[in-house]
Every structure is written in structure tokens, then in C-alpha cells.
Length: 297
Picture 1: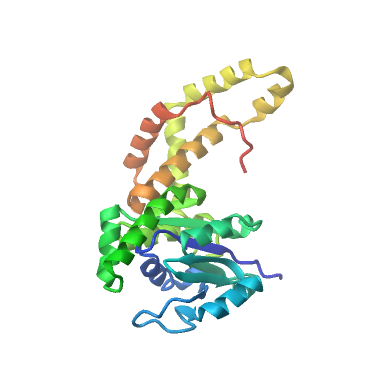
Picture 2: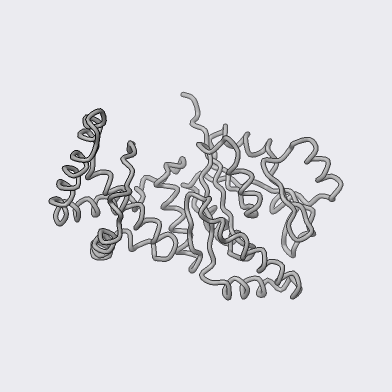
């Protein structure tokens, strides 16, 4: 039987947001089937970092030679140093059925996301709870001068608005909570996890559908009737076949899931009272006249 290819999992965010700490926790879970993409850089090793494990530490001249050879999936210059992801290792691991984590700078992630490989990419933007907390985390490293810290904070202000280019935005307010959220996303996306547990998203989906059925079924039925009254005759059959209930359930479930990933605790996704209140609130906010009748898988 042919091996199912793995995925490229982009874990990106501002410097100091905690990408390394999150990755260390993720790799403790062997069920996630992860392998680490070792990036190449021209910066000096920090205390405890090992060449070939944390990074491939190379000279600027060597790195620029590799750029000319098109040897990187992505590369970028950041605070005076190059960072890049070598192609060969990544694609070998994907073909072997491994999920390859790319812990990369935002500029590099934008390069990867612009490529024609989106089906094999899962992108996650890691957000700090606040800019103050981000600055404190950088300071605690004790490796950067005040000027470098300022440069990193200025860069963060430019990078954070790019979070909407990613599939998922996850706040790293608490390490364990952030890691649990990422694990749930990997299970939801069926990213070759050998863990039999189902993503909390599907529990959320079931409760949302239950709430809509119990409290808003009359509304859904009338929404469908109104749409059928408005559509032209040549689109009527397609609209009659459209699953309005499922469409609304997906919209509300996705909104709640995204909100919890960005600002909440992952266990809220299995809290019926929490979900019910969120559905009530969202039903008042959704603009039903602008919803697209896209085909749902």
C-alpha cells in the first residue's frame, strides 16, 4: 500500500512568541508523527544550541551560494542574518509520511504560502497575549541588546497583521493550552496523527447543530423559503438541494472554533453551556443576506 504523504506544518509568529517552547512540547507526543525541519542560518549559535540539531550554522557566503542554487523552500534576512529552510530534507520526510514542522519567521512563511503547494501545507500563526508580554519574553532571554529588542518589537508590529494569511491563529497565553489547541487542529485536519482521539471541533459541531435544531429550526426553514423566493428559476433546483442547516452549522462552528483558538481555553470546545451561549450571540451577529451558498464537503 502506497504511503500517504505527510504535511508541511508552518508554525510562525513574532520573535519571542514561544515557537521553540511550543515545538518542544509537541515533539514529546509521538502520536503526532512529527519531524523537525532544521533551518539554516548565518547567526551565531545561542547557548545550548547544537549545529545540525537546532540549526545548520553557516557563513553568509555559503548561504548566498545556496540561494543562487534555489536550495530553499523559503529564506529571509532578519535583523542582519539569513534564515532558510532547505528543500531536500523537507520533501524527503513528506514522501516518507512524516509531518514536517517549519518553525520559521513570518516573511519566510509568506514565501511558502505563496507557492502552489497549499494542499500539503497547514499554517498556524502563534500570537502573544499582548505586546508587553512579548517584550518581556524577549528580555528574559538575556541575549539581545536594547536596540535589538526594539528592532524585534518593531518587526512584530508589522508581522501581526499578516496573521489572517494563515489557516489558524492560536494565542500562546499558556504553554499547555496553546499546545493542546495545536494538537486539536492537527487532529481536525487529519494530519497523519496516529492518536485515535477525535478533534474537539466535531463535538462542538454536534452541539451547535443540536442548538440550532432545538431553538432555530423555524428560522432556518424560513431562511430557505425566502432564498427560494428570491433566486432565479435556473438556480432554483440547486438552491432546493442546498443544505441550509449544515451550512449554518459549519459557519457557527468555525466562528466559535476560531475564537477559542485565538482567545480561549481549548476545553471550552466541549462545554455545552459555553457553546450554547456562543451560538445565541452569533445568531444575532450573522448577516444572512450576505452568506454565500458554497458547496460544502
